[in-house]
Image 1 (cartoon, rainbow, N blue to C red):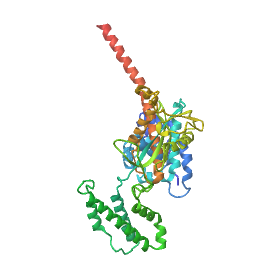
Image 2: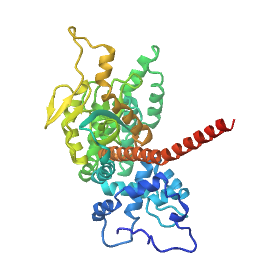
Image 3: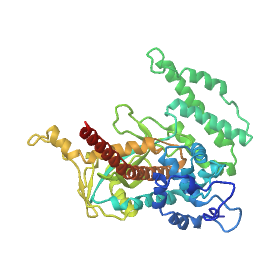
Image 4: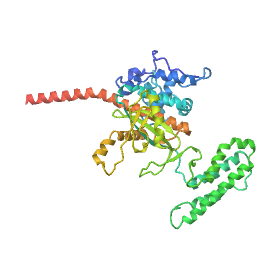
Length: 442
């Protein structure tokens, strides 16, 4: 059942009213008034039933999700900050200063599952609408980046050991008798994998890896043979993944890199410090100069940048309602010059007749390069560096909420600048006036 916020007009004798203790010119208070909170109520009310115990109010949950992304906090830490900070409580719609958590941190997990990809997209869309009056140009910058999943760096030995442990776990759950669990053998073989690239240990490490693969294949086959038809249907997807890990080779496509996140893809972006990233690909669409993210789209797997261009432009039009004239991209988007009336602008490769100089090349790519710091700040300041949300839906939700947090961070900076600017001018004027007075007196 949908929860309701407390009455904003009725006063409590025992608790302070937030409006009386907070600064009305604080940037978070001004931002609260600029967001259309009723739109969230209308969009998410359908996801609640009309019976049962009332849940946490939608305004509170959406406010917590946004605060978490704006200030780079976790599900637990945003609760602690909310309890201490009256501005956080006012942002979430509270009328009085609260002394207890608004909800359990796990409720944020349930709320994200409830709203899903469409709900996260709606939150992002409303942040774009809040800043829509700042968009004056018809150009948009588009680029892709890797959104890393929260998994360990995959190696064959790690994956095979997880397969062995998973087989033993399923057999224990189904009370199946096994010829051998290989627990002690597995530990010995894993020790031989240490320093596997050392010239004197390569041969031993390869033999240990082959042995691990044989044991894993043996346990998977034994499990398939002993499981009943009902149990095989229950563990069908897990058995497919286990068999795929055991049989996959170095040059295979669509390999599995994580047992609990099988959709994870290997993405090579050509970085010197990080050759491979494991996760999903995300397309960013940014308005130059004002640096507002007007479109963000997650692609599971590792598609070519050119194939992501058309869906990215459709996503921009869906989210912002604006059809941009030019899409400025890098050389990775080669092949298409125009898509649905939008001109694709990319720097041309230098040739022998008219070679580019450094200054000419810099001038060509200057506006496009503005998308790189936006991606960096979204990753490091809005919790997109590592994606902790589960599954392919988690990839979409994380990307949309991170973009929403980035847009609101930019709006907060703008509000703060507008508040501080007149004060700084007055201080400078006062100092200049006193300076003139001192000169006249002397």
